[in-house]
Length: 458
Image 1 (cartoon, rainbow, N blue to C red):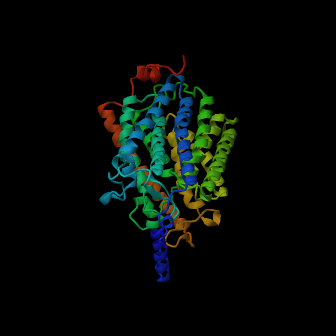
Image 2: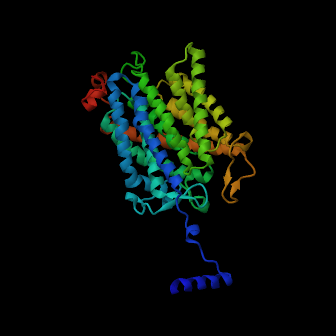
Image 3: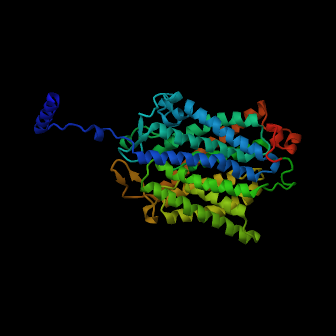
């Protein structure tokens, strides 16, 4: 009791003399349970996008003899990237890289050194934090789905062993630098600290238009060209073997994408709600845009077209999810749906490449439209959020659309060149060493039995 009384007297004296005692709870921000719960749910939703979402979406699009191989590829890539992420991936993407800080991080958090449940990181709101381990595992899912997306470019003819080696190398030399360039910064309390190359330029990418979609699409396109066309491509019919599974997978992608986009806000706030709304309306608009365009051109609206259009809308709204107003998101979806229909038909036939599951036509074209379009729909005059100025703690009073579009174009150009060059070098090296594709006889038999010794259907 005497000790307590003494502390009370000391506190009164300090207060009388004008010295304020710090309130530990106020001085040290702690994560809100609601934010933690939301980020855990978002992480699970992104995992749902990959397994089973992407796996079933891709699996239904290939021929029956290759169904199981696609499932195995997506599932295994998720496992591989999960391990690599905690070993060195998170560190290289989200730490200070010293002399190369603008382009890639360092190894100070290799094996998650110093990352435990007691450590927090700041969100996009000053003084608001979440567990760093929560942020780490959320970002893990982004890395995994990006690498898994590439599978669609050369499905039905790639060696399983070559795919795994490529996945490890591409993750290291393409994904990690791009994630660092676009998303690494000091946080709102240290907004002027060194940041990634594109973040420092002011490039906006809310949830991964450049890091995920264009990055993966360029690798898929280069892979399709270097690996070569499927046996009989352009001569033999190669229709999807199970559009029901593609529909189920596409629907799971849409559901999971709410974690992908709204979760990227890192907090359960109004911006997360805005991202959720935009993820609905942009996707719906793109699905209708693709479907009606196809209806006009081919005389019939197809389920595959509607689902593909939905995915293109999800891709396009990803970088703009927290920046666009709902009307801007709808316009983005309407433009993207029709444009991606052209990407998987006109552009593909014009250039003559065999992108098996149209990764570039959807994720490349949609990603480019979304990334550049973000510079338009962020405009407050069009219902966008504007550019937040962390120096003043408010949205900037002036918005220069031409400048922002130019910055967005620089982001697109950087990822196109970076991923394109890295992918070409890696595919070429693997082609010269271990070989990239199975033999023609094995391809005709199907990768289910050739690569895995089992069949999806008996």
